[in-house]
Length: 163
Image 1 (cartoon, helix red, strand yellow):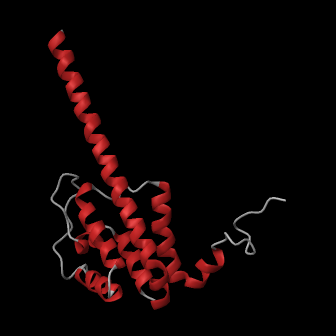
Image 2 (tube, helix red, strand yellow):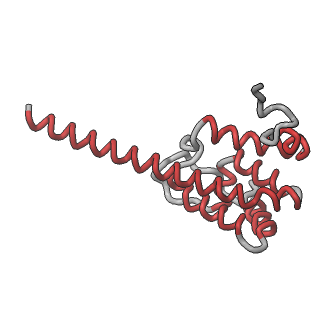
Image 3 (spheres, helix red, strand yellow):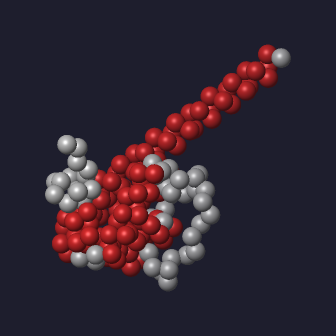
């Protein structure tokens, strides 16, 4: 008999644990998780976000992570930062606070996991790992795209000189 991971008695079923988080927390956590699953993070994040993603991951892994994340979230409030910049993949790197301001889904996720001591303790290292993975995907995607563009330019240059 086949079983679905949606059945509550299946140990792979996340439903009871997710529902236990409460709707104000699980929606924000699942929204970010689904966005990563649907789009491998390349549209929401640009190379200029990579340092900030690493910084957030270090914050989540570090000593006093809850207080440190609260400080980043406080700095990211709309009253403390200049307006968000236009989406420019080649722009200068942003801070973790600026990243949270620019990416509301990541900001909501960060607020959701930091709202409860037990949720934060359970999720902070996994969230840090996810941010590191996103950073790698973004870097690899944009590096490959740059290489393809350079190859195309080289090809176009050799074609135009032959003719």
